[in-house]
Image 1: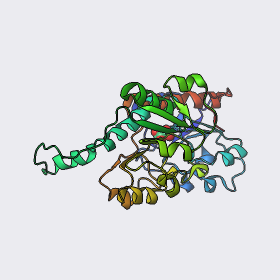
Image 2 (image 1 turned 90 degrees about the vertical axis):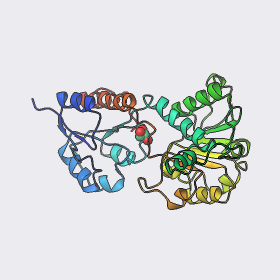
Image 3 (image 1 turned 60 degrees about the vertical axis):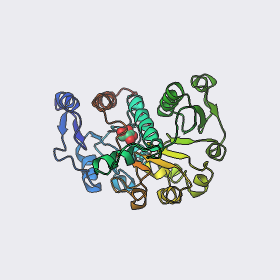
Image 4 (image 1 turned 45 degrees about the vertical axis):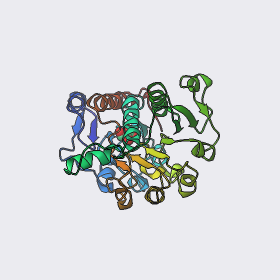
Length: 324
Ligand code: DGY
């Protein structure tokens, strides 16, 4: 019997690629370059499953006009899936899955890294030392902002937001405020002595740091806009490990550049890998190239989780992480 035909859109960790190859007839992307709309449209007709990632724009144009695709499942490698038009996929009977849980720790670690780097001016210091420009210790040199005991606002209290709260509260004695679409269970808030507020308008003015952990996509585009940035405390910091489009980057660069905010830490960008030049002009904005889940352990776990979903969907069982 012929094996299901599966397309992987990028290189995956070796161990997972090997496991996939044992079970399926796999089309690998040996060049590791993002595929375009035409390639995905063709794959819908020629493969039983596609395994995309965050770099794959699978919007309406990929599905428009297609009627009876061979593809039955999009097993996304990653938790966020706003790059996939899930409604269009569902209309064609294509199951969509993601890989939650396995990347929560590492993404929260990167959010905390950015928070500490921005507050303590670690990027500026690193660049200074490497440039040979360090002239020695002095009381006024690269003075930053204390983190311990400050107030952290968390926007989106899913698994990653909760892990961030745990690190900040239990590791750094931070007071935690939460803004989330739905009510968070008292025991979940209680684990970090957190308080849920009703809106971003209520959260922003109270926080020394605000960390974003909500989904991306059209619904949350520019959720953090100029008006909301203006509500933040003078000298406060914004951390984004969610999705670039959640923040109006021009407004953020303006607020940081004008000295109204203390700085920012960004792991994600609208239109990445291109980065808005005005953000790069601000020395107190720390920028990382979307490293949230980038540890060997997590990237393998994401792959095996995608494989579990794929196997279930192709075998006619309910995939554990179906999102559409
Ligand atoms: C995700 O999983 O959505 C990340 O952004 C990629 O690791």
